[in-house]
Length: 337
Image 1 (tube, rainbow, N blue to C red):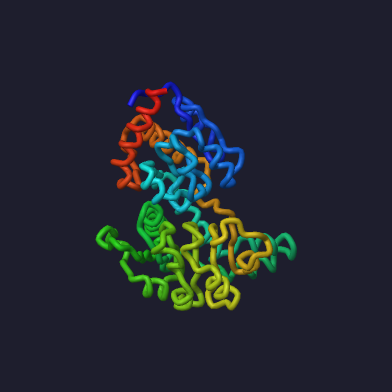
Image 2 (image 1 turned 135 degrees about the horizontal axis):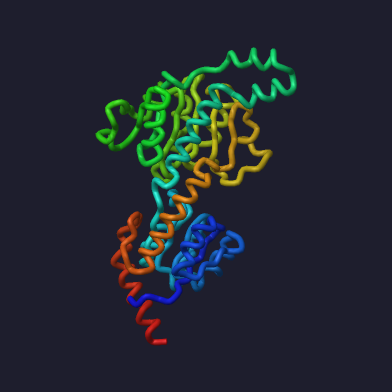
């Protein structure tokens, strides 16, 4: 296929200046004015490729006749109708590993916050003075020696395990479908045993039909009363009402939640009223360093797709042959104009 002077790339939400500059070296770049389904449908009408940072409507590809591929600005694929993309011969790529260190560091930070509660100590020293704040600090505990149960051993799970073992001398237990991939310092455990014995339960899996509510009411009910949940993967991996009930009844000690079943929880929602939960707005992988790495990899994957190469992280290989036919049809249509 002949190289076009300028491709058209749609970005669903603003990206870093460096990422945009990288895309603009070979494409005309437009940022969707908002991420509502109707706006994205209209904005994709003349796009050759979409960089995805917001959920695409399920029928997006019926409204994007020229699109050759979509690149997820991140890892999770729940923003993209992958099956529809495959049916239309549209390649889907993501950038696994780009923000894994950022997410892993965030999870460790929240474990330490749950163990030591520095925010409470700061409130006390400001409001009630040194003595009361000092007395409250005696309730803290070390991360060293505690068991962290990690569900999944992909880029984030493996990085988290490495930090915990080598940085904190924590005990690492992993539930994974590939136990042979584990290092000798990490123990493999089935999910039921892991949640029953771990001091922290940390899901590190994508949201799929198989992982939705993976951590359900039954498994949450098996956790120790001193245990905590840390979730920076996807909200739907946990049965949120069951977790909130366990928190409100003090059946578990606490939780750190960066993602939610409702992607945009409101101040009055039940999850926001749980006093023993640390609540953050999906910021685990949202650092300047992570965005730089993600942006670099997105630009490279966009280049590969637009110029006819197979992307490095192709998540729907079943679309490849249809994609080649799609490219040929688009090329013939262009030549006939």
